[in-house]
Amino acid sequence: MKFLRNTLDKIKPNFEKGGKLHFLHSTFDAIETFMFVPNHTTKRGAHIRDGIDLKRTMFTVVIALVPALLFGMWNVGELHYAAQNIDSTLIQNLLYGAMKVVPIIAVSYLTGLGIEFAFCQVNGHPVNEGFLVSGMLIPLIVPADIPLWMVIVATAFAVIIGKEVFGGTGMNILNPALTARVFLYIAYPVEMAGDIWVSGIKEGIVDASSGATYLGDLGVGKVVNVDVYNAFMGFMPGSIGETSTLMCLIGAVILIASGIGSWRIMLATVIGALGMGLILNAVGGNPYYDLPAYQHLIIGGFAFGAVFMATDPVSAAHTQRGKWIYGILIGVLTVLIRVFNPAYPEGIMFAILFMNVMAPLVDNYVVKANIKRRLNRVKA
Amino acid sequence: MSTETQAVEAEVKEREPLFSKKNRKLISNPLDADNPITVQVLGVCSALAVTVKLIPTLYMCISVLFVLICSNVAISLLRNVIPGRIRIIVQLLVVASLVAVVDQVLQAYAYDVSKQLSVFVGLIITNCIIMGRLEAFALANKPGPAFLDGLGNGLGYAVILIPVAFFRELFGSGSLFGFNIFGENYPGNGVMMSPVGACIVLGLLIWFQRSRNGYTEEA
Image (spheres, rainbow over the protein chains, first blue to last red):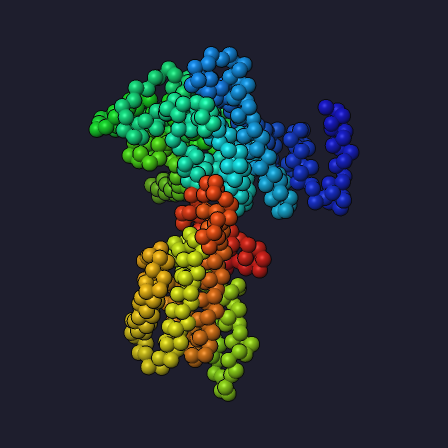
């Protein structure tokens, strides 16, 4: 530790104004603050600067994602071997999963951070590792067999068009990871839908019919008996990290306990989805209407979206009341899109992106309502 | 927007050569600093709709260029006899008959392209670039400059549409002018095939242009 600090201090003058490597100062700054808590202090006014800066916030989210990631890797392997009727051990499953997932993670980080560093360097901004989280989220919401070049294209698209165009970290109106996902979904519909959810189908090792998901079946109007235990634990095909509701709940606990994720948004999203599900149950009609409302919460990527995507502090609503409205509408829209639009089996992605766009509007009206209420109090 | 173009007439007494410095600007300005699409943001609808492939885009650009030049000259010739109150109707009549001609010619000689462009040929009538030039320029200028203005703005339209179509066809279907570039296995790109892709490419072009010439929107 001491050695590291000394080395950094020794080379630091090179990157300061006038130093010969000044043009790389963003990169240096990023590395330095990544390893050590920055020693910035506030010079004026009575403010306290917390040790938890953006980097540490982001890292907490990454830690919260680890359970989902590990389970996802295991699940990729388990499904792959199970579909071939091979009994496999925990280690085998993890190894196979890692073989599939680690390259995706590496590619996602390299592409995203590369672009982000380049932009910061050119614009003279300090590097904000907002991408630490996005780079981990992107691999978790794609199928395990996705070609790596698609990950590169989607990540580049998300970082440039979804984020840097608006001014970089903290300025984006859309969640970058979901931007990447929706890009994949619309750009490569053939590769991103249908029987792709069990690793090995493309190579012909695994029988295609084993890859059906609940959402896929429901979308085409089949009657589906959701195996609640398996769906909750995540023993089902799907994108790498989003199948297990349990792992998402562990992540949610970490986020809420550390005060980083908003429990209001998570709770509101669940309430919205449950409410809409119950209304549809009451109406009835086809198998999808009749799907018990609570089952909407455990199939597909709902839990993952509600915990890790909807709570993105940049693109979510900022006011307390706004967060409730934002979350509830995400839940309602998710169920609506799932049930009424068979062309899009998974609604949570579109629901969150739609509400990302609407969040500033929600905030605007919440603030206005507050001003109006307080003005009335003055008048009275 | 284009205040300087309106002032061009500026009481010129002696005969001005057609390609004077001032008149040359009528062509060069719309290509960059006063581009009808990226700066004035007119005619965007067709820019998003017809740019999936290069060939229909080229036909569209030529059609718009033709209609723009002819209507500009026609309105400029008629400018002293058109009553002010009904000038929009007169302009529409002129544009509509020109568009009808273009449509018939396309149907006769380029039926496939005419099918692909479908309603967007007819919609040239409502293209804001054309109405904008007629109102802002042709009504107040002689036929010579009006011709140049039409040519400049038509080219300004083409100079944006063709790059947009280039990138959309290249990345969307992996071909250029219908020739395969990336090989048979290129999976295509649905974003670039849909108008969303055109919107993004157009935005990137505007980004590129503004970072080059430093143009900013007045607040």
